Image (cartoon, rainbow, N blue to C red; front, side, top):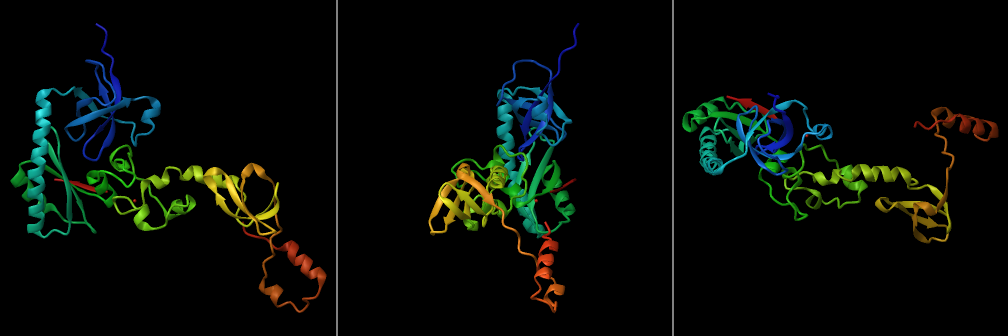
Length: 315
């Protein structure tokens, strides 16, 4: 009898929208978006098929190791069990919040996740510093009768767990397609000429929006093609100085000698005049006793140079 082929799929699972590589012994056609019951390293969980695990798709994962296996497609009983888990989470969240308050723990409860197989409860919390929660875990285990994992997260992770829609009117990126949250800087907003008002460029987490990174590399690439601000250029309109960029449309604003300001496409720039840099003054130059010597000034000019955003514990 021929050995059954094992297929591999990328599956999204858990409240943190984890992505992993899972095996599947075919017992029916699998399609994108199908609900599946999986066994991960954490236990029995509810997952969603994203795609076939091609070499290119695996390259987007943090790890190419197999995280577990797809057990089956859910049935009516499984959907009922999923609803029961959600109901348990409400009670577990209330109990956990009460015990944190009674224990006066310096932490803020964000969310709890009850795994589909009821093997474990993950508690997500915010805290400014490390917290000794061993006594809290003992109290939780006694009251909830389940294995507890405490997970210290950041504000971006909080938005991923709780946020719904962003200012754009669409579901927040961190809770839909983003698998990781790379750092975002104010420089990215400046290059794209976005508003520098923190209220307008901050996401639901209170930090700079992740979408500021999406087009940043393209802006940087286009910016390198444009003459620098302050450069003297020759265009079809004459000679002028570049005073600003319109990066995404590959245009520059040029002010001419007659004070006209014209938005000029990159292809209309005939040439860029490279001005010789002004030599830097050195202490020796300033203390020289022969400032009127033409040769010494020339030599000084020739010899001058211009230097070129988690911790986890289980009990």
